[in-house]
Length: 32
Image (cartoon, rainbow, N blue to C red; front, side, top):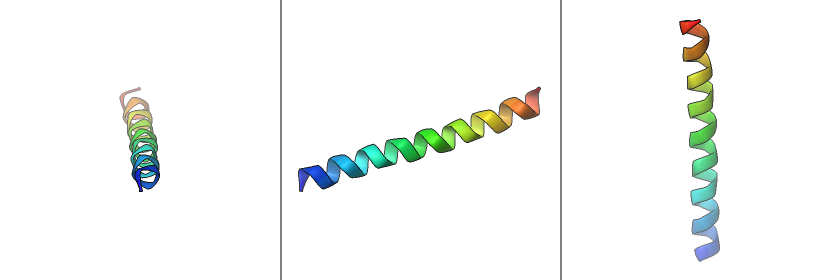
């Protein structure tokens, strides 16, 4: 059970990081 929770948390961090990266990239392009 713990393994599933850990995997879910890691997956969530990866998803958040990817979305944040895309947002920063788009905002950086717009500012430039």
